[in-house]
Image 1 (tube, rainbow, N blue to C red):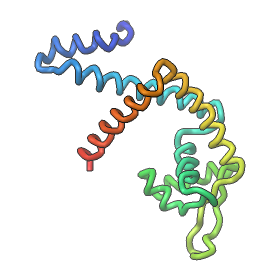
Image 2 (cartoon, rainbow, N blue to C red):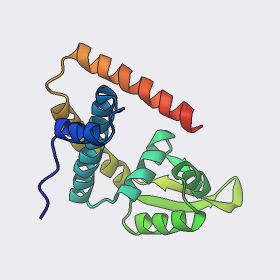
Image 3 (cartoon, rainbow, N blue to C red):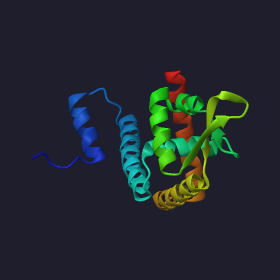
Length: 168
């Protein structure tokens, strides 16, 4: 049976052994970000599960909250923002409707279309997730002072902008 995952420094040493042109500083940053992303995703997934939500449902709740009161969007708009097909969006909304998290009603301005809205229960579920996530995130950053947090945030935004520019 293989040993547990090597430490970050061990992984970089292995990579350097196999690929001598490797920049260890770049590799350290990129692999640390990758490991952090994976572990945070697991933690957030567990938090959602304790509240009876899937990651897919959380994404819809976020989209509805992001538009502000009265927290309504057309299903096609949500699907486009999440990169889903209309059929996948319909299935997701059906589950959320059954759970009491959203409503689906005819759009008064265009009776052919439906509009998805956030229920009080859906908003409360969103708030519960946010409370748990905020506590976890505070725990995660507890060893950084405000200046370090701001600096880290600025650096990560720069990296995010670089990746976004590269992918566009």
